[in-house]
Amino acid sequence: MHLLPRAASFDSLSQRHGERYKWLVLLVVGLGTIAGVLSTTSFSVAIPALMRDFGLGQEQVQWTMTGFMAAMTVGMLPTPWILDRLGFRKLFLGAIVLLMATSIAGSLATSYPFVVAMRILQGLAAGVLQPLGTLAVVRLFPDKGQGRASGTLGFGIVLAPAVAPSLGGLLLDHFGWPAIFLINLPACLLAGALGLYLLPLPREIVRRDFDWLGVALLTVSTLAIVEGIASLQHSGPAAGWTLLQFGFAALAVGAFVLHARKARHPIISLGLFRRRSFSMGTVVSFAYGFGLFGSSYLIPVFLQHAQHFSATAAGTALLPSGIVLALTIPLAGRMADRHSPQGVTIAGLALFCLSFVFFSLVAAHITYPEIITATVLGRIGLGLVLPALSLATLKHLEPHHLGQSSVVISYMRQLGGVLGIAMSAVFVSWRETVYAGAADGVAAAYADGFMLVAGVFLIALMAACLMKAQPPHRQDAQPL
Image 1 (spheres, rainbow, N blue to C red):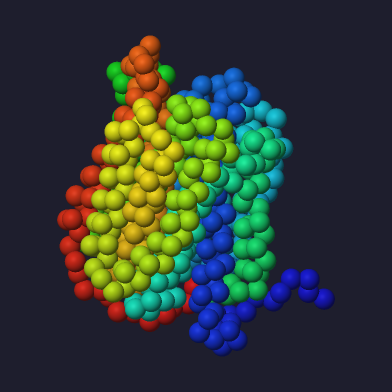
Image 2 (image 1 turned 180 degrees about the horizontal axis):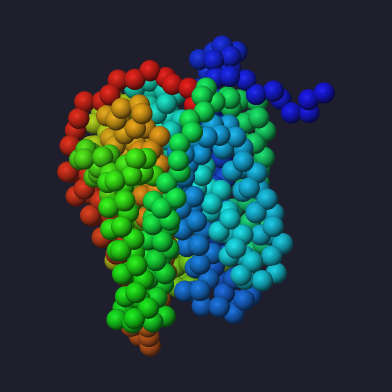
């Protein structure tokens, strides 16, 4: 007697479900992606409550966000290797189980170190899940449908950060911060149940040596960068510890480059960056993560800290932009199929940049309608970027490069998110000390933070303009 459904091959599942099978797989992977992203941004509204309950400063409490994001970033690196060894099905379901277990454990936490530990484990699970969606799109869908599929997947990736503060605020006000750990459980349960029925057995298992040294070097560089940014606040830019962290990061990146040139199977192949569209796409992806997660952190905290909104009101202020985003994402996917993905990406980056320039200019006296207007404009921009960026960056690559390149793009987006949250928190805290005692000093500090995010997107806009258009590599649907 089998309590669980028998796993089937890709071919048999395709025959059973027909043309709709690839969309069913995308639904499963999208639900897993939503669960991971909900775990990321829903915690932003809990920052003030954690500060009160544990008697900590913002630069310490932000580790519930940056620790998660750093673990999420590092967790992506071994994904191509694990895929080859275990297959898509086992990797996806294992990550879902880990995410559920750590979410339940985190909701029962009674000490701040345990909260951070569970957030780190949540981040590892979410990091494994993150690149799987992009990989499913580029493998399952022919060229003409990739924009639509990417837009459908992007609905979850970008909508979740938009609506998570609203849901998190409601949970926080009614049940306290532990309940926010559980916000992803419905998506996890549904993704796991559907995955048991719909995800296929691997067609073949590939065994090759794991690049332990490469992963170690990239992990060191990621953690050193995050700690270096945090050290800017508690020690200052000229402090020995700050300089040491940035020195570690630079040395680790340099050592990885030397290692990757000689390694037989590096965790990230440097040859991918010889294509200008891909290398510039990684810059845009980094800035996208910086803006997406930095804004999802900054705006709710700004509304509570500077404008004195309740957690529910702060989250609800972002809800209209989430609705607009839901309408933008499918349209953006179709636009990317019909028009230049590079042009759509540039338009989206410009809109998001303008929204944060507006936030910066009116932060001290912003009204509720202005909050709605600015967030809606920014989310339209984010909605345009995600489907188009995937096509502009990955569409020209050969099939055997898609697994690793998908991970690189996701890694850079999440690394941008790590730095976006850490730099936003530290930068605003520093600006508050500069404006201490001044009228509207807190609002002015957040205004500078908004301008920082706008500046990063301006750099991304220039990188997008440098992406060289190349003919796409034609490919048929492939098994997972």
